[in-house]
Image (cartoon, rainbow, N blue to C red; front, side):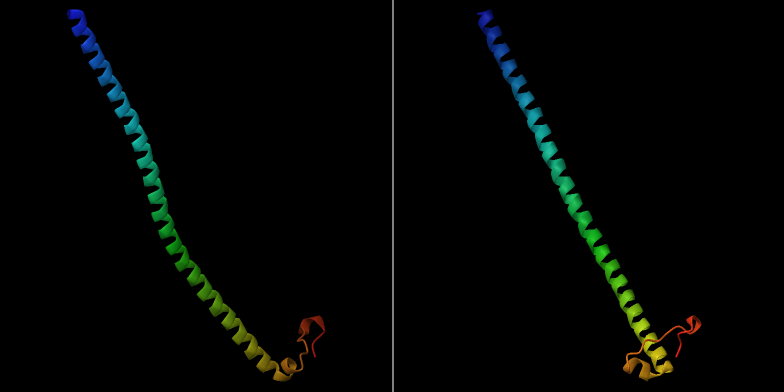
Length: 103
């Protein structure tokens, strides 16, 4: 009878050990999945903020480039008007005065 009782106790203890081992394994798997999910979430949030910041910076750069192109165009138009509009209308190239090719 004591041998039967010992076998029942050992079987119960072995069953408890297996359950604890399964719980630990599943806990590790779920923790890894939660960590991967957290990393994906953080990467998404970081990329959202980075794209927002980059979009703002790109728009500022594009505005500055547009203003620069407009300024250069205005400056070129003023210089062409100062030199005479005929040079622009006749499509003659303006040459550099120091090179000896001035009109």
